Length: 53
Image 1 (cartoon, rainbow, N blue to C red):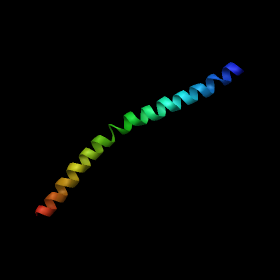
Image 2: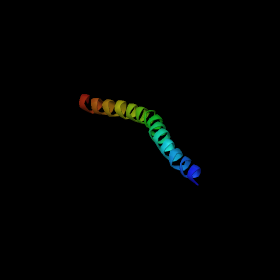
Image 3: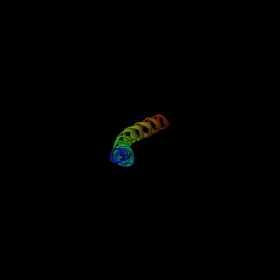
């Protein structure tokens, strides 16, 4: 029971610590980059276009 109890919290903490920050960070980094990149050029181009026009 102690062995099972220890690994369960350990794994949960390890998974949360590694997967939560690791997975979201990796997913967030690539996701926001393309989204922001696409949004920035569109917003800048549209704004600059409207301003220029």
